[in-house]
Image 1 (cartoon, rainbow, N blue to C red):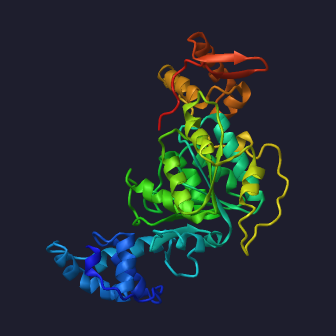
Image 2 (image 1 turned 45 degrees about the horizontal axis):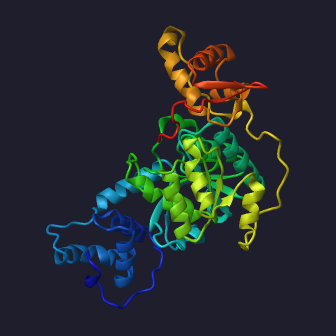
Image 3 (image 1 turned 135 degrees about the vertical axis):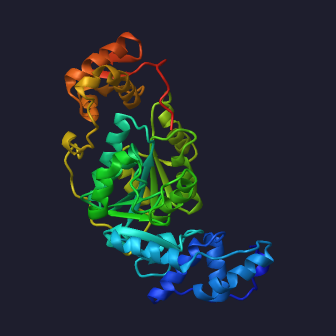
Length: 401
């Protein structure tokens, strides 16, 4: 469907007022070939989703698409029943619950589903994203920033991936956090975030523009990322490789006119290369939440967050961290290589305390210590004064995604 199919006259877009209107909006957005831009262009041209649905086969025929049929009423009703079953609310562009920040981006979702505390959409938001294979220092930094920003009155926004995203959500549950899903709002992904997924649906908010029950695919995540940055007044990147989804989100944020901040890292750590590049290119260097708040201080909103409240030195005690499954004793031999990899994945060139690493792994010290000795003897790990350890400079790369 090309622009030549449309006239130059437009009709002001009004949100759906009835259940029938909402069903038509959902059918139109789920129809083959109708993306965000086409949805809004057709609605402005013809005024209502019901009218557009009736015209779609003819418009598709003029564009060279034969035997075109819009999304069926039955499929839309099935999706709405599934939404009611899991307590999801349908939010349409122009609704009172549709956040102004998201409505202002070039390609806002016409429809999205929301589960949880929908009032969080009306509070000031900051997005925190980063590496899935995050280091211990990276996760601790994300937790610290999320807790401090929450105490300052901000809701955190992230993508519920493992690593930095999960640490951000977990540290923000008591203050408010929004998870933007790559698949359906009712679909757990990845499986290891199932407990956090459930907690966010109660204490925070999960949203998605994808159909209910849709398992996420790789192509969904870049589109998801524009919503993460679009909801927020600023974006913070905590660990990201030079080529990563986090940098796609940063580019979206810049295109949307958002402030971009980044946590610097060691030049030898591949997980820090993307953040260091952003800082080189003008992003705000972040040492603490104060740097983020200062960068955003020029943004005045009528819903200014409450004054910052002091928080404990460590907002993420070990017992609040997600617990990873422990290897069964009968499988001890096969679990050792996996433990080695887990340790290496959490270390970088910057030294970290051994006891902190053990707490992050959520494993007994007696199980971690022998593995550390093995890695030290193999030359993968270096011990420093004060009980600190780091990845050897010629150790395995940690920049994978």
